[in-house]
Image (tube, rainbow, N blue to C red; front, side, top):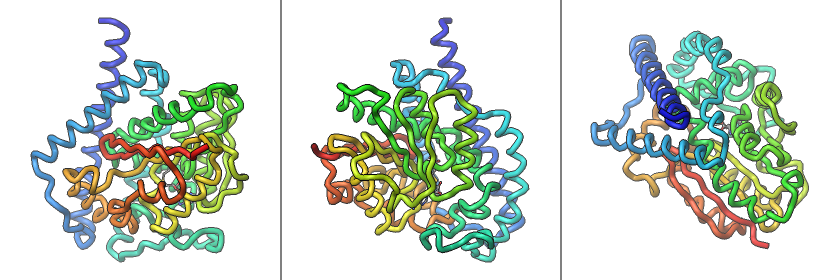
Length: 353
Ligand SMILES: C[S@@+](CC[C@H](N)C(=O)[O-])C[C@H]1O[C@@H](n2cnc3c(N)ncnc32)[C@H](O)[C@@H]1O
């Protein structure tokens, strides 16, 4: 067996392990919720055996693309294994300890339970909620500490593979500035959260200048810890609203944005697209990744339906019916392309020269 085969086997085994762990966690926690908070159990759509087979195939296709992109050198293979495992194991019990307060909020239908000390004037109203019933919303260090593990569990260990799908369109976008030194290229990750996308970009393109923006200072602190612990260039993190960002027009050659749009009301979605357009230098790219939608993946409609019923995701239904291509076009973007990878759809669009 070659080193290549061994690494592939290790990657497949890791993904299978994460998938099983995610399924087991969700199975046990749902059973507990049925017992302790039966009133909060939603009326979900049936997931048939055929649909489960489709889901598995789609997940395997994602895994294969992830492996091929790494094998072709888009990013180093070590990226496939990158996670602060010890830290995650240490934090995992916090997820169970948090569960009773989530059940309590679910039963009371309380979705605006955010820390009292938060100055609400610093945030748009749509943001001040417990997205996915998360304790403190995005507004505490406790929430930021367990976010990555929660997302890994939610997507059965595929979250990072889905995030990595922005790297290929990003590479194509940056090729348009081929004459320039990589160190002169600037990329901004919008709604960067705990910084996992930024780390992926930094590993794939080690010399470019990277920036991240998010509304949550707690999530940015977590991102700062994560990014500073790894090797690589400095990443600059700024707190701000993606609808109105503190940068001058045309400052970046590319912008990325992962898993933000399903948490925005439609007006904010258009504002963010327009603002990204403003910040991109003519010829630059915008790469957007978020949930698949009803139109591109009708076969997974029951999964999308269950997601919004199970978790507090107030704008998800509107998002999955939204025409993102049209929004990008209306902002001025051209050359719009989109591909779906398991539960994530990735758009790339250019600002004309
Ligand atoms: C679902 S998380 C995604 C985070 C990260 N991109 C990832 O891949 O995990 C949504 C993020 O968007 C941020 N966010 C929501 N509304 C925002 C806004 N208007 N401006 C900036 N950040 C926002 C939240 O604070 C949170 O970190």
